[in-house]
Image 1 (cartoon, rainbow, N blue to C red):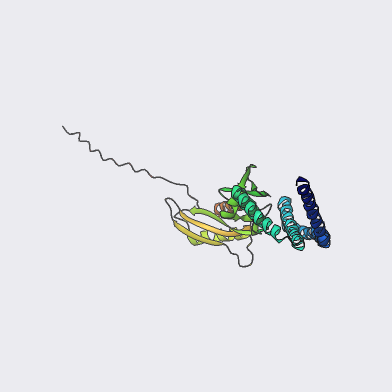
Image 2: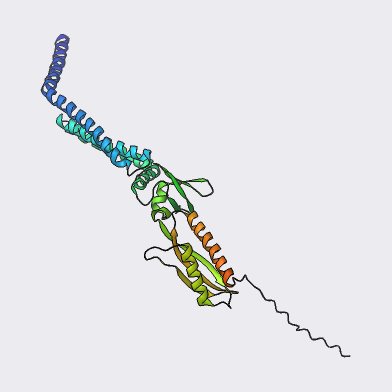
Length: 292
């Protein structure tokens, strides 16, 4: 009985191996076709990667962002080729299992790296935004400076005091920011005051002409002069004009130049810029009766 059992087991094994061999021989053309298709998709991924590399070089200045985007595109194409190859091998169940497993793994990774992925995707978004580029002068999250780097995790700003500030990408995407470099010209504000005895129309015309001579206006631009109110010792006004501004320093330079020009014009025409004056009135409320 034992000999018959051993013979039956051996025969079953050989039958099983024979069935596998037959399946391999039958599916051998599909196997070679699947391999060829997968290799073709790999070459397609490399070619498409080179094309997108040329496209991204003009749009993305950061190498890390550009290389990551190209790798993602290549990975997607190769994954498509892998799934097509599995379909040619009639491995539908394996394909379904792979997709299910990839979904579970992706969900777990996404939950574990939620903050990191948020900054990463924000970095990708920032790299494509024309509103912020390397070299732009921006104000955001309470900091102001020139953008020196945009990577997958953060943006680096060099402030006017030569210190660097590292801000997470998600903060830039979620919070408003002001970019001085997106417009070549900007409006400058200068506040001042003149004495109550001044000829207000003459002061207005003199100030407007002084600003126009030092800051030529273009197109529809104009110098705007408006009195704002009566101060403690002066009648206050604001003058607004346009100048070439791409960073905060340009604003300071324009204000500096305008203040010097206004002061010289006022000195030459006898216009007084009063400093705060406080009048102290001494009243003798003490009645001294020396009688008696």
